[in-house]
Image (cartoon, rainbow, N blue to C red):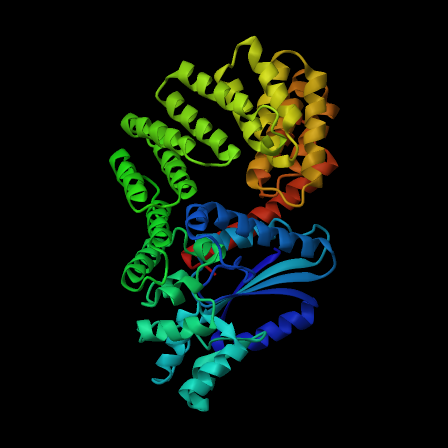
Length: 527
């Protein structure tokens, strides 16, 4: 296996880290002490409303960006190890990040992932203020900042050594903390003056100007999905703005409404109307009100209740009445069409998509929206002569692997149904080229590539062209990062042969599957 999960007594962790560095040479180290593994501190302050409404997308983008950075580092080759030290149970995002890293280890190289889990030790009774400040800072701070705290509080050196430890210029806990700590607004404010604190800490601060200092797009992404952290933070900011006037009322109001929307996975039509009514009453900027309307429409369009989907159409229409970018206008039409389709209004959905496509005509900067609209319209027109033409138009516009994989699987399917196998293989070949050239690819792209390759392989197999079928099966399987030995077994069964290349892929997939299972066990506390 290329993944090792070790449970180690806290006092021994520094020594184990030093040994890993000595044995592996190149080590990429991550400290998990309370903040996401993928979070980087390269942020400037961001627009509140925009960042809050996009926080879930930003969270995904940042995770993928760090995975891409790991992939590039591993691709340099040689003996390399990703090492993660965990003070507490990992989040699902942490495990997903580690699994994505595992799938990017370079075959044939001595590369690995090691997870070090702390076995908690007993801490002395003192030092709670030190630990509280570390917790408020997210679990670790640069040594320079910690020394400033030390000077301000005149802590005892022996207590510091007993309750803290250092890692690569960072000061963190000596061992996992389980007891209650003296968390106060005053202490939160002190930490925020020197450190980039998470929004859960900033939500405690009574000074709105200081609380605002903590806000970045990364901080919003970190807080996305953490209960009601965003609402607490923005609500506290709004109340502070009312009292002090330190932040313009419309700015704080827009942020508060955006946080209420961002913290929800579902919303009702009446609540959406209240939010938009308050945004108008509080004189939130038109472009921000449009973003609120668009975000509410997205939530409502996915609701199983038809009444809520009718509200989605009103939200999308309201967004278009205000000042929004062209891509967002198109996306709002796409969302409205989805709501109409789910209400079985096929004609209305088709008309809405055609309207959006007319708006986008001649605008090359919105290729992703054009590809989505054309592909979705083709799906609605399935079985008509127009459908193949729509798919072809979408394919002609697709300019990267994400766009290409959105349309490729459906296009290859309809081409094969139309007995246009040569064109289907041309599409598949270009898709593989785009996939291989991409800096990094996600699960959706990998699924689309394998679906296209397997569809072509099945066609060749049905025609008795076993060798050609094996070539396409191998093309798909070799690009599947997730361990799927059962899929390879099914392919081998279908072929009725045991090609050496596929047997090698089967062994590699089995290894990946075992490693991913070991990492998934972290969520259950299985070491």
